[in-house]
Length: 332
Ligand SMILES: Nc1ncnc2c1ncn2[C@@H]1O[C@H](COP(=O)(O)OP(=O)(O)O)[C@@H](O)[C@H]1O
Ligand SMILES: [Mg+2]
Figure 1 (cartoon, rainbow, N blue to C red):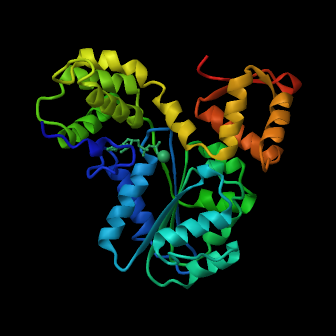
Figure 2 (figure 1 turned 30 degrees about the horizontal axis):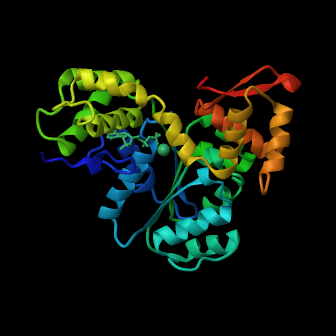
């Protein structure tokens, strides 16, 4: 059987991006056709999990790469508890501006970016986790570079930013993605099926059911397809039909959580583990345990940021207020 299951991998950037044409045009307008001299070209992308934010940025970057030369592109994700210097160092490495050793201060990293005359396009993903958003202001002053900022929750992320950064981001073009519709998810699935599996191997009712289960989240849809393809032998099936999807789908609803746990930074991960171990846990107890267990505990503000992100990812919930606040994981 001819298969190409690699296109179902989590990190695969699709060769065809479905139903995001107008967003690609918006990115082109903001990043390619617009040429401010004294400041960066900035765009932000907001939208729920699985709405294709990361994929849109990476797909666009690949296109940018094909069209404008010489060029420098880089991607970084803030989820792993990075400082501005670490973020900039990753970008300097990714863009190839400083592939080996990077400067040790934020100011020097910014200086390196400033000195480059080739077109630069960088993406900073999951900025909801950004510890010190101030450096975005300095970044946005570098003439000629393109910057894509990505987060799930627009309002909360903006509220946490210092005033000047917020107004800079608010005045830049913003792309707001919504969850995909049932038929859009079906199209995304068919696009991937054509590349991954032989013709006739997946039935229409199966695709409909996968899309229904995914409920607008392309990540869950593709994870379910991958799981079906991997389970074929296990269930003695010779194709992916509705029955197989029914057998497999309950092992995938967790996927969204599993993915998020896997991708969490050290501190959100630790908070999640403490809550899971002791739920329901009082806010004060959580703080004490966190401070005792973390090797380099973050302050109140960042702890609230992490807890807010965990709630937004539907991984934990909060009951009560003030001293009576208790946290628990969503699963139970
Ligand atoms: N428009 C699309 N066309 C094809 N595949 C898509 C599309 N949008 C998302 N995907 C796929 O869905 C998955 C989740 O997308 P992702 O960009 O990670 O979502 P987000 O960053 O918003 O959580 C990825 O595997 C991606 O390849
Ligand atoms: Mg993403």
